[in-house]
Length: 407
Image (cartoon, rainbow, N blue to C red; front, side, top):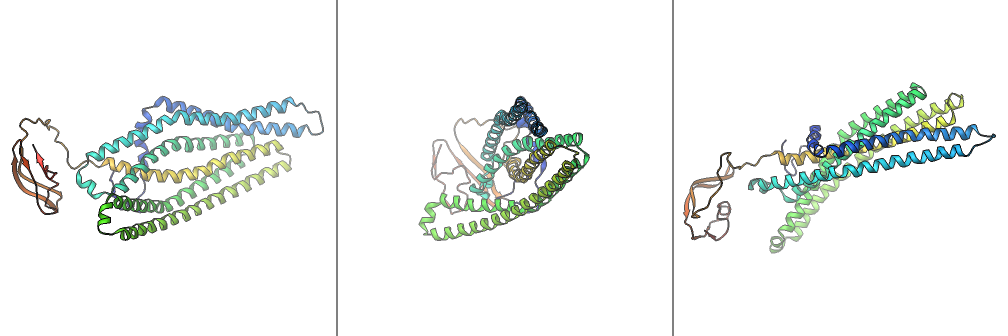
């Protein structure tokens, strides 16, 4: 996986979904916690799906008792069951998040350390070509993206799909296939629309990230070289350059916001039409006596439970695409091997007399930029040597990277 520079990430590049497979080692470290969290997830969804059933029996009992004797203890028990199911759904969700927290936080820690060590092992030319501000942004967004992918892939997409299947099964068994078909059509249209539009707007998300890196790099580099800016009285010049980068960032963010508004509006329209169609079917069956008022209430509750997380699923898919881009950039940093590495059979350095010898040394940051050519000299132990020369002559490249060098 290639590590692209700060502003060269191609606009038409599609995130690699195989990145998710690279997160498995971080899950495998805590298999027990992952399995326990999945167990709490299932219990939470079972309680969520059972809640409208309790609501149905409450409404049906009260409706059938109109004008007759009402045994208050029956609806009280049903109301208590309804409340316990609501509480159980929230409780198991919180327990799930609490158990899984260690997994996500440890993954961020592991990756941050790996990137930190890897960057210190990279050659000088890599750091000369990259800007510290943009690199820091990539690391920050990448580690946060890993946490997001671990949490939401397991605990939002999977449970939402599970809930859709459970609700569809209940509606099919209790009512008729028409409700199931209407829900499935709505879900398919919603998912296809969300994927297509999200693919279209990903380029705006990536452009906004690139402009963010660019403006942040400009600010950090200017502040790191504060003295030089002051010496040349260049504060206004630096401010104008920074404002130009901020203007590019502002325009990119505006495109991102407008495309997001289009996506949200389309998703809301699909959900609204589906609600109208399904509720109209239910109203017609209540009027004809085919289903009870409690059944109508249960269908309405299921639609609310179903479409709210489905709407969240659209948000999660957008964020997952963004997280994939960020994590891919982070893994790209780890994927590039250092150009300069010790040989496999390299021996440990043992200093005896401390003499340094250069014997026909050649060095260049790139093939077309040779710095040292056929350099030979010796520095005996106990001697002080000064390296002088014009700017760019290679003084800092040599081991004598200080103005004075004592062995």
